[in-house]
Image (tube, rainbow, N blue to C red):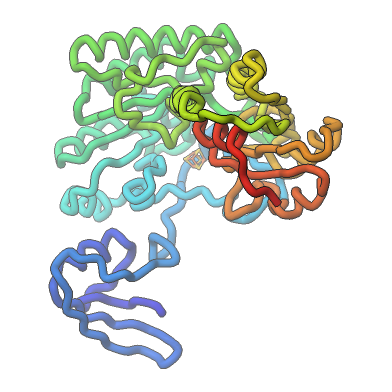
Length: 414
Ligand code: SF4
């Protein structure tokens, strides 16, 4: 069934639907197999009446009008599922899901809507506050006014979470200092700033030549971030500036303690996930009284391998159980991507085949690699399991607690 209008107003997304629910009487015009119909519903004002939408937007998704030099969508390997090639840049998804948007395609009407509906917070890909540099990084002449746009949102009472995707030699160094100075000066309107290293795949044909971060350049960025977060903590009691976990991994640095991340405002952006993972691992480990001793193998991508090897040692060294860590190399993205979440099913199959694992071993695959039970390369989890009938292959929620429980607690396995 399709909802066409509510109280004679066309509904474009679930934000408008939620607003409509404030009315105690809803006059719906809907379209179903019997054609157009009118339905009148009386309900308690604000009460959810249980309508489930297939998609959060009922009109066309707003797509991005940029051509960023570091665009990850453009670096996708060919032949993947279509949704991976969509360059969405829809402020409504930012408000509903926390997706990052650039504000470069926002019309005056969109701005007024955000201001009047006061939907907050919004997640903004800033990258740099230097107007000329932003235009050249995003290759869009309409991208220069970001600071004014953010100020306008803040003036309307909208909270902003910002991210800076850093490209070495482009917007790090003095440009990073400038961006962090500008953004932190807008606190508390700018609630958090995440500093994220650029992701490069092996599929960059026709794209500008870029380099990724290494140990030294990652350490320099961490120093800069730390000097800002230290200053912000002293002044406001919040770090505000947070470096992505990947930068700590590249710099071979320990993750800061949980208090550094405050309320973990950019967890969905991979900021603080590792700290939470490690802490929840140890907490769960203390709660398991009678661990089982079934041989277990943990699958991980290259960048998280050192975390899992440290946790593996906790179990093996005290002979709690025997765990192996198997590091899968990502060939799906052409060999330059190391994060676990972007492993393909074929990457894991190839790794398992070459590992000579004893029959009966439990193999845990983090569910961050799966979307609707399929890997990014469309291999289904069931297909992967079928390749190894002698192993007990399970997917596990990507938390330290689940890793402990699925390793140490007896369970019925297929
Ligand atoms: S905003 Fe830039 S990085 Fe994001 S999809 Fe558009 S071109 Fe790609």
